[in-house]
Image (cartoon, rainbow, N blue to C red; front, side, top):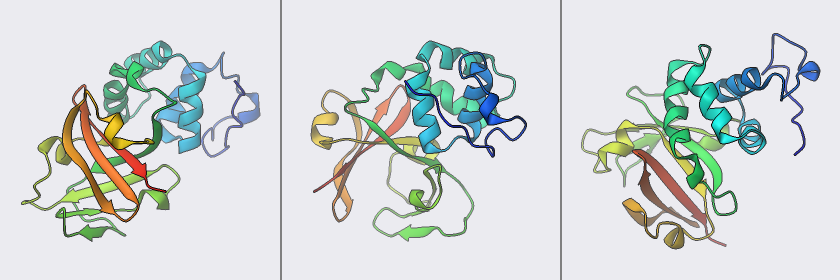
Length: 189
């Protein structure tokens, strides 16, 4: 696998060209987990063995608490992600206060931001008190993965929101995996 050409803004305290991803693995992993863009997270995921990622998350004293908690949950059962079937898409994070740029989805009684407007694929979500979505979705961050066929991808899994179409050309479903909500997205062609 090729090494990543690291951004100076990600490794602001060193010359990124001098970073050896093997020798400086913990440093690289911590920075990417805390501040990495989608392509850097994808590269890290493919480059490093999952036991090393778990070890860094468990032992790190540098990771922000919210980052550490999220990745602990995510890495707990990392083996479930088949890169040929599941492609990382975005992360949805629940919040309690209004945020600039949020839009209201009346059908779901929630506000959200567009995950495409930032390089990290972050979707901020705020729910009305009478929102009928499952509590786990309203309380915990969710990861979203693009799949070729949502109906096939949910087979044998704990479905918490059945397949539906929130917008034209998109089909989604939510499953729960190891206590974490996962959104599966299919773009219809």
